[in-house]
Image 1 (cartoon, rainbow, N blue to C red):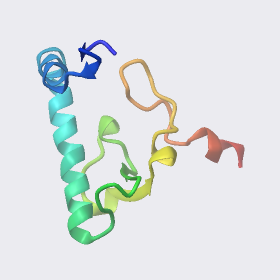
Image 2 (cartoon, rainbow, N blue to C red; image 1 turned 30 degrees about the horizontal axis):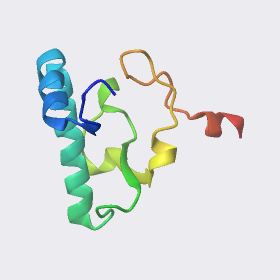
Image 3 (cartoon, one colour; image 1 turned 60 degrees about the vertical axis):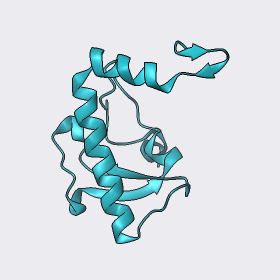
Image 4 (spheres, rainbow, N blue to C red; image 1 turned 180 degrees about the vertical axis):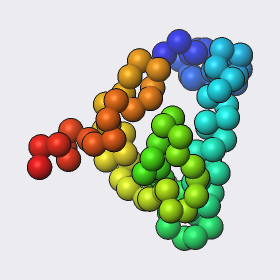
Length: 100
């Protein structure tokens, strides 16, 4: 890990680097956090449940945080999509779904 101090992850240093290098990531993270909070308010997810709030149309492809564009899925299912070097999705269909 690039942000390690005495064998521990330095979250403050990592966050400062992210804010400095990638200001658009700050906005995207805030949008993802807002979607998670909305899902928690609806009772769809809770802290530590291993679930992700997935955007049907990804934020990187113009999607929104509206309830109609979000769904709750397992973390493994949500993180299994192919990604480009910049982190955007290559396809909205996971490898698992393409095999069906």
